[in-house]
Length: 218
Image (spheres, one colour):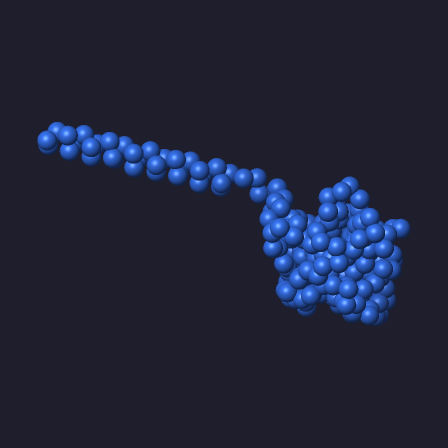
């Protein structure tokens, strides 16, 4: 009888060890995912693309333009650009002003939530729908600017996405496909470099004309 009990305990211990090994292997696989991959994490109506890790989409050294395709259909929906212009401000101090901008793609009816002067930084859960204030202007819409060089002394950073704005604000967007309107958001923030912009993720509702909340993922 004692031998039978020992055999049962031995088999039980082997089972526990096996289950522990299976658990450890599964955890390791989860931790080895490529952090640079994007992931669709949305609910049944929301297609959410997380950028892992956050991606620099504008940078004065290497990334002067970024094309955003919200629904991954191969058609550019919005274009982010950074320009550099000579700056001469007070006391004839020279420098370079770098400006980050966004605009709907050309020949589209896509639009950006606007506050009457510049793209409006949206707080989390702000409603994005037909009643939002929209601009379809295909000209560059100003996100931020920063001057490098002596002129910076009298030409401070500016724009709705300058360093005075809380991080991780949302850009309200809508795009048109096959005559239908889809509402979307992109989460952006100034990068560590004063002349860079970060993209953290974006999402859209697959149901035409249905509102989406800034930051909504499901």
